[in-house]
Amino acid sequence: MNSFEKISHDLAKKLYWVAGTAIVAMMLLTCADVVLRYFRRPIPGTYELVCFLGAAAVAFAMAYTSVEKGHVSVRFVVDLFPHKIQGLIDSITSSFGLFLFALIAWQSVLYANELHLSGEVSLTLELPFYPFVYGVGFSAAVVCLILLSDLYKNLMKMFAK
Image: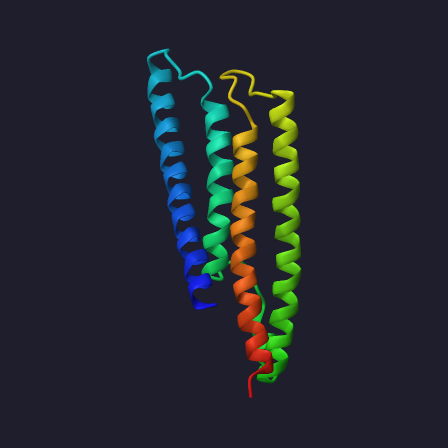
């Protein structure tokens, strides 16, 4: 399971770099648009691009946030329980998270397929929506891999002697 965990964490780090790149691109694009507006030459579609890049940044940061346990949690109550009960609670939490993100990944792929078949595009730049929705689905699938690894570790903690 250690190599599985390493692969999923490496993939999460790569997605995290993509998210960071999207944030930098958002900043540069917004700054350039503000400066060019001063000269009455705004960048067409800036709003659309910033929205797409924001979606990519949030989606691709999800996996690394799961690796780092950067989400909000209330551990001070769970830490009061015995080790095996902590493992049980963490296993249940990982299972629910795994179910939720598997559902998100699956529905994102279905929705992206619909968008691809319908040919829906953004208004100004006419960029297709579906690649970004596939990105959300892919990122949710990577979160599933991380939660599966966490579930395994939690079950081992629960059944350890």
